Length: 384
Figure 1 (cartoon, rainbow, N blue to C red):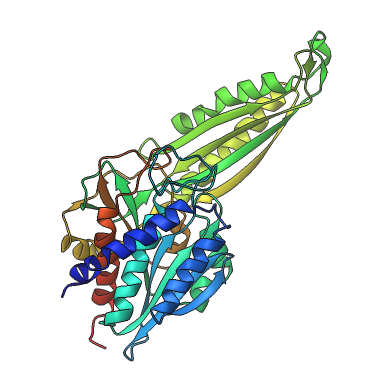
Figure 2: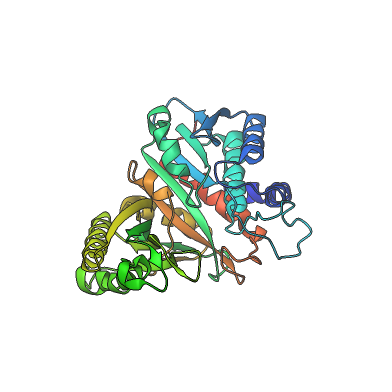
């Protein structure tokens, strides 16, 4: 019996697990119920469990045969701070929280692979099942790395996948290099001199200064970044003042940047600091940048992408080298430490992730689980 057939036999049970996660969403680094349920299931299948890795993370360890080679499979567990509008019978029971990105499905697919591999053990080596907290900008991957993830659970390769609405159901999308952009958040504190709104001549207006800085920042991508590179700098918030008749003392510019390399990220950071300080100085004000790298660019190791694509091709059609996405993924930090591959699994028509009517397609659970299981059997070949 193939891995896919064996996992399909558990499809109903896995769907029930996924819908239970969906009904009880937890935000990043608060996944106490979710991680406890994950650990409980892993232990019930005879898998060694390590709890509290990087906070609420869980790592399951499964050994077979005498080999010492090890690979990691990773899924994310957190939900988003938004209200669900699907009307599903298993919709979120927690006001203001929703699994709107499919992490409940990702966790379930990895659990399906873990159950199958624990039963068959048709590999020679070690598998680390990595259930990560806090992917949605909460620093979960870095928290696990700071907790010595790969020192405690060494891996020669790591693999992960994400669901993809709008892509044909059961199709896989694979890129050999850059998969998605890195992302940073920034705040620029502009400090001037407050005054009465009727006496602007005695002020150094930080709001006016912030508006000019915001306009100037648009030149960073167009005039400082190689046009053959892709980058985005978006100011998403300008805040200053509380009253109609008061020129405030400070104003704050906030936004995000996206990029496909660490080098370009550095150029954007330097450009933001230089432009803000220079424009502010022209108005007699000062400006200070706070830059926070939230996601590194997600870059596949070509040989690992090819290996994952070969396995995926046995389960469904594979589409290679579509344009990389501007969204971000903190699995990228793990792949900066260990070579790996991150692929997408099509879920068919539906709302995009982060939409209040988003729905994960349970039909693809066996496909994702089988892809995880088969990459283990392929990478750690050899009957135990």
